[in-house]
Image (cartoon, rainbow, N blue to C red; front, side, top):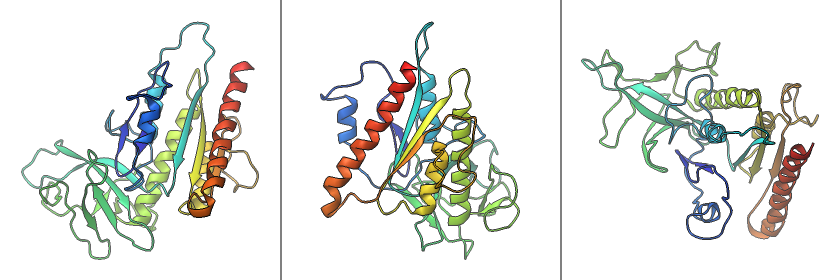
Length: 290
């Protein structure tokens, strides 16, 4: 089990005989989760993961799956279930922030995420803490941002404030300008989804055993655009999703949308969640027995 908010953690490493209800079991870990913070839910994309313990969660989950030795004759299905209540809008990078006279290789691990609409800024977060936001960046003023808890301001090797990031995706930034991209909500969210998509493609095309991806979006924060994106991550073949969502030849997963889990909808929400997980379990069992 890998959880993610403003950072990510491996809460329960993969292994055999994981089921139980006592202290230290995956059941107790689920019960101890506290839903808050941002949505650092992306993958490492086309680059290596920046940290093997607090790195991009999709990549951490893939590494957990791949850490299990597959013995001769074992019948194995690799599965990832991605469960979220919001828009994936944060990424992780190593950025040089020490100013002139420093060593350019002395980079700082940073999480940064686009603020929720209608805000257009970007929050910079401590990757070692789930809810520690150092500062926010306002793209309209090209203001500086802090990169540590002491309030130090991020400056490049020429001692200029760092106001842009280097994207992985080719072409222009979401705002139409050539890279590097200014820290803005639109640019960072665009990059976060690109890295997640590339990570998902890599997982679905792993050899000799590819990964089946299932996604669950819960709550009103999962708007239609986010639903389409989660369907793309799962490679859901349902024709109701836009063209380009499904890639033939790669393992087909499924996206489940649970619209509301508050107030009078709570009982219905529990039923829908149970149905989603039972459906996923049945599909895994079917592939194991085919």
